Amino acid sequence: MLLRRDRAMLAVAIMLDVAFHAGRAATVSAADLSGRLGLARRGMEPLLQSLSRAGLLESVRGPRGGYRLGRSRRDISLADIVGVAGEAEAGEGPSGALQDKVIEPMWQELDEAVSLRLAATTLEDLLRRAAAAGLRRPMTEPISFAI
Image (cartoon, rainbow, N blue to C red; front, side):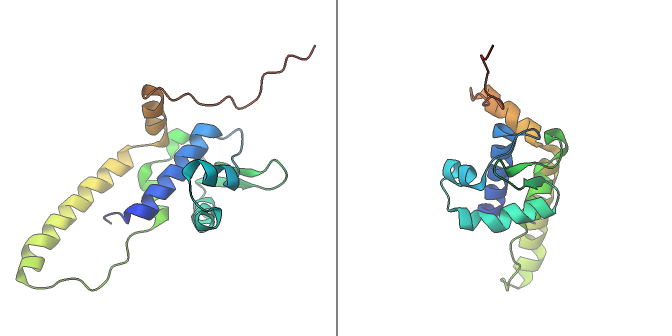
């Protein structure tokens, strides 16, 4: 599974942004996501669709539409997110005795360690890290002073 870092990291960044700015109550537009992440919207769309199909994000249509979490942030692990992002394509790699007896077994051990850590880390854990770093979540609804 060893991560295809760019796609996996983007998926985690999208999910964390949605959890941070909207959670399950509000929505985040794809335009806002792309602006905050500094990426082209059209490059993110296939991943947003994959995350939605997997039930990790919920797509809301309409003028106030966008994306929100499909499940509770404590129920979404990084392994769930990375699994949707997909594994790196397996291609033709090196072969030989050293590859088969040394590198492949070592790679498998690393893969298992990464998988365990991803499964044990949730979006809730990342939001705690954001709070510890001094980041404040925006309020989901503006304060109204109307009388």
